[in-house]
Image: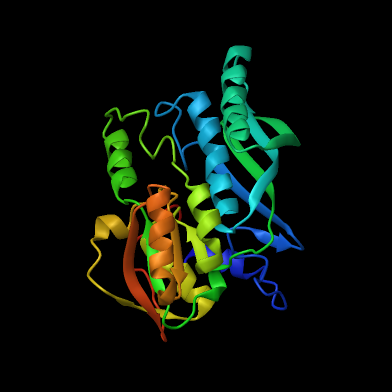
Length: 278
């Protein structure tokens, strides 16, 4: 068990259906609470992105968690650790990014906290509403495992940034592309879901751990597909009888579906290096 998963396990709620801690969000009644950190030199470097892009992405990665739980984001709380060197103009650019993401998804920013810091660190809590939350722990034996669209470009673009090269402002690494309309319509046919933040391999391991299942893969999956993080596509499982219905919904919303495995008894463990923790 890696350090992140071990630390999370210390706070598990044994008597809760979703254990509250361990899903993309915590479900309390019909509300879902999700929180993500977005820290300088861990998740981004300021020379890679504009302040507006940094703020926008920090909101989007949290909204992605809410969507994966089949909840509709309503409110956000922001905590921002601001470098002392930041000017008022830089703060305005940061605010523009937060407000752009909030406007796009109909979210009201209702509060939070600001502190002075040496680095730019952001933590966001998104509060969402749901009628039917979808958990990581509900994959069923015989389900088909699927992910949306293409994986791999974020890892390639991240390597370019490490190499001192430029990447497109439309790169998914800078501007994740979410597909809420597809997922909300498809949700009635989906048993288990989460977004791909730390790479397909790690997300499969999370489903395996939460649902106590393994996978029978249809084909070998290249390592660059398994390990590409920051993708924010959706990984989900569903009963095979709903495949045609899901394909029709995906076509309607111009979403590609990749069917990669069948859920079986057993376990699955990724042998990849953890995305943030060594």
